[in-house]
Figure (cartoon, rainbow, N blue to C red):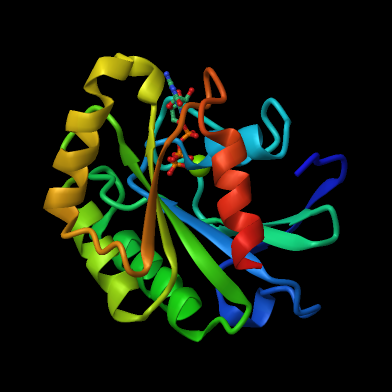
Length: 194
Ligand code: GTP
Ligand code: MG
């Protein structure tokens, strides 16, 4: 999709604040610092529209981005960030769970993992949980500019194996916000799920 108009319409912490116009939504989940906001920026062709940071924990609310008046991207706070207090972590958990389990407009979730590493326990729990709720999942292995193409096959099988990846409701794509690798494929997946 060629994106010209994007608007951040809401920073929500609870269901009462979600947009009410019924457009389909695609959510982005993943560990803090994995590159969710960067992926959002790449897809919408902006440099720093969704605030990115080398400091984890930047995104702390559900941020709804209206894309071309056609859909919302929902940038979700990252999990697994140790410096966030326990109470805050639990509040994030509740907020994310409430959104994922109750949102009728949610068409699919892009679950980001780091292409260089084996998925963390949190990545695995998130994947299993989305799977349990029958939500279509695109696993995006990002920061793929940091590994050579020759390592893609091996990295893909390591990630799929530890997630217990299911071909039935999940897809997989390497991605890089640096080189834009995988951008078209991610857009195609999104458009196929609207
Ligand atoms: P939180 O909002 O804290 O959950 O983080 P986030 O998942 O939104 O991560 P963000 O997009 O802010 O990126 C974190 C850091 O990783 C930044 O320094 C980015 O520049 C870097 N980064 C993100 N994507 C890529 C990528 O594809 N390649 C490389 N090399 N760096 C990336
Ligand atoms: Mg972010």
